[in-house]
Every structure is written in structure tokens, then in C-alpha cells.
Amino acid sequence: MSHFPFLAIDHDTRRVSLDARDPAFFGNPNAAYAALHDACPTFYWAEQKMWFFTGYDHVNALLRDRRFGRQILHVASREDLALPEPLAHTVNFDKAEEHSLLELEPPEHTRLRTLVNRAFVSRHVEKMTSEIADLCHRLIDRFEKDGHTELLSSFADIIPVTMIARMIGIPEEMGPQLLKWSHDYVGMYMFKRSRDDEEAADRSAKEFSDYVREMIAKRRAEPRDDLLSHMIHTEHKGQFLTDDELVSTTIVLLNAGHEATVHQIGNSVRIILESGREPSSLFADEKTKERTVEETLRICAPVHIFQRWCLEPVEIDGVSFKRGDKVGLILAAANLDPAKFSDPLAFQPGRQEAPNLSFGAGIHFCIGAPLARLELNIALPILFERLPGLRIASPPEVKDVYHFHGLERLDLAW
Image 1 (cartoon, rainbow, N blue to C red):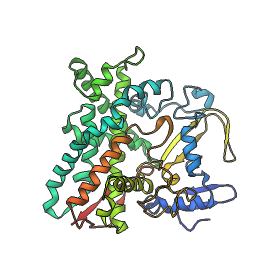
Image 2 (cartoon, rainbow, N blue to C red):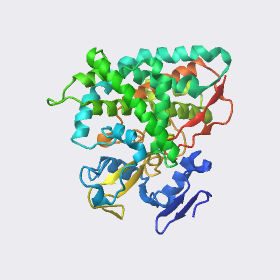
Image 3 (tube, rainbow, N blue to C red):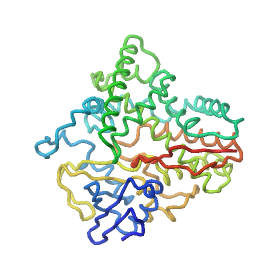
Image 4 (cartoon, helix red, strand yellow):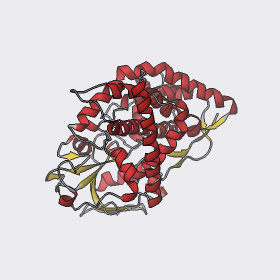
């Protein structure tokens, strides 16, 4: 048993009851992860009806293991697996997801990722350094004299969505609308989702898709130097992306290109301020800055869980899986594995231990990782440099959106 009211662990059977809606859990999941590491790093989560892995080596290996995949219907039918038919009220969402990079397996995944990858390699992304810095300074200019701000709405929300929209070629003024669509869209990935959440996601998926189709038509007629034009007009082995593939890819890049980074900016600022460390020492030079950012990604990752389908019979850590089983990989818990990280719940920016798994691994490693890292490495030092004496003005509230991890708001003063 655990000493948390929301968590019950049967050590012998590795069966766990965990209420993901309890604010005591999603407000501080790291404490629960530590208890799971101590009792059973591989466990059956009763409420989710599937096995989960928290051990670093297991999560890292399973993310790369080709016996597991993001989809299953390329190797088996719904009838084979006794899967229910798709929901009638999420047909627009399902259509938008049909060719998502996050969901595909090779060879389709390889073709799509090859076409998109060039725009996200580090050397290309680094050209955006001055643009990101300029945007950070402009945003801080708006609220610096006030002596206080709510950081998510005034800063964290705006930077990633503006930069990914610029990259793709979507007008920046669409930022607030993109945020709304994205928030509705990711509602489909929550454990807590309701029928209302599903209908909201479906509505937003339709509006989002319709808008992207309009943009595709414009760029097809008049190409520009942007990622959307590149995806439309570039071929891979004699093939171009279809409109449906372009819609899915653009939506996943816009959503993934900002949602997690918004959370991470807020999480990082909070963890730095709560640590009591002198910010100037955390950003003293390039190496120190990078280590600080990587440590915030390790200890308060924005995306906690990825799921995989088992594609063939396999045994992992003494658990037998058959084709069609689903497994959960808790990236944020793998980042806290005491077998890999000394004093894993402590914020220690000087660490030189295992790399964090916050961006995943294997063929689905986050394509936007270079952009997210660049945004964090630029935005955080500028914020702390411009606002000396920065402090948390009221206790931060964590969003009830497990298995994402981010704040409702972050009220700061200086």
C-alpha cells in the first residue's frame, strides 16, 4: 500500500489503483511516480485497464521496439482484435488524425517525416534565434512596467504558437484561434474526456481542417518560402502529399509545435523560482543554460504518457502481451528513475546523467524538439534577465489535463 489516498499498490500482483483526476495526484505526479518506482515500476493500472512502464530502460527500449507501434490496423482488422467501431460523433477528428505523423507507422510515416524533417533540423531552426528573441522582448515590453503578469497568457501562450505559425506559413493573427482549436483537439487525449470533450474536439477538427484546406489552395496557387509550400510542392520518390495528408500533417505540427512548449515554459519558470536558486547562475553561459533547460525538461516534462499497440506476442519484464494489447509508457516517470538519476526528485541543473525522455525516442522522437529546445533556451534567460526579482505571486494551479502537465495560470510579480 502507499501513503497517498489516491494511490493503492498491490506489490505482489503489481496491480495499482490510481485516481488521475485527484488534484493531489496531477498537482504533483512526481511523488506518486517515486512511490511506483519504489514498489513496482511496471504495473497494471486498474482504472486504465492496461500495463504501464515507468523504468527508464524499459520506456527507452519500448519507444524504439518495432514489435510495438502507434497503430495496429495496418496489421490486423477491427474484427480480429474485437475493437469497437469508430465513434460516429468524432468522424471529423478521426479524418484529421488519419494521416497524423504521431499515429502512423512505416512506410507512410517514413515518407511523411522525410518531407517535413528538413524544416526542423537544428541548423534550419537556429536561423530563428533572433526572431524568437525579438518576440520575447516585445512581449515583456508590454507588461514590464506593470510589476506583475499572468505569464501563460502574456508570454508562454504566444511564443510557440507564433513561431510555428510563421514556420508553416499561417498568419500570426490566427494565433488565438489556433490555440482554441488545439485545446479542444488535445481534449481527445485526456483520461478524463467526456462526450462534450469529444464533440468539441470534432467541431474544432472540422474548422481546423477547413481552414488548412483554404491555406493549401492559396499556397498551391502562390507558393511562398514556408513549410506548407514546401510540403505541397516537394516530392518523395515520385510522390506528393495528398490534401488529406497535408491537412493531418499541418494540424499535428501546429498542435505539437506549441501545446507542450507552452506548458514547459510555465513549468520551467515555476521550478526555477521554487528552487530558490539565483537565475543568473543558471544561465551564466551556453553550457549552463542548456543543462538548466534539460533539467527542467527532466523534472517537469509537459507530456507524461505515450501509448503503444503490441503488434506481435512478446514478454516484457515478466508480463506477456499478445497482438492488440495496449501498453502505456510514462515518460515523465522514466525521467525520475532512481536507477538512472541520483536524488531524482531534486532540481539539479548540473546533472550529467542519462538524457531525459521528454521528447520520446525512436522513429516517433519529437520532430519539433530542436525548435522547442531553442525557444526554451532563448525565452527563459531573457525573462529572468529582463525581470530581476521575479517571484511567484500566488500559488500555481496545475491543470486537470493529465496526461499533459501544465499550469492553469502562473501569476508573477517583480
